[in-house]
Length: 124
Image 1: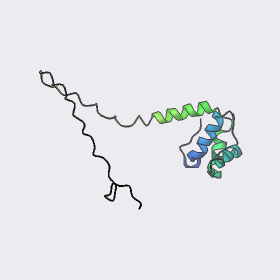
Image 2: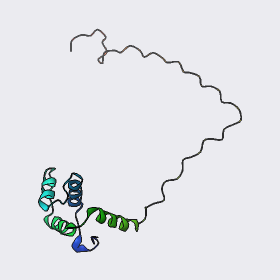
Image 3: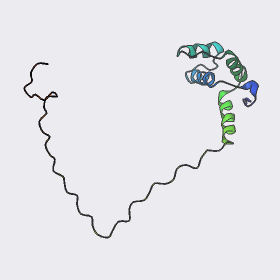
Image 4: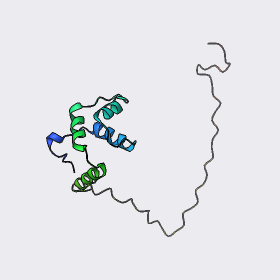
């Protein structure tokens, strides 16, 4: 497994994300040049030091095992907050049945008039 906790192993996430996308895309062991090209294709500049550290840390290691070890480290942090409260309950209501709602009558809008007060459609 990799030890990404120390400062000398500090990684920039964009390099790691590009590396993982290349692996998902079928490149079994992406090189620094592969990652740099992938990032450049979307207008992002790679951090050469971070990228070289990443490549050297992952060299010869099974990515599945590395991810599993990292997942175990994340589990130590817990799952975060307790979540939101439950929704409010419905009203208790009276025992009487509610009256059916009456439909309101829709009033017709008055005819539109010219913005300048004249309804003759003259020239402006």
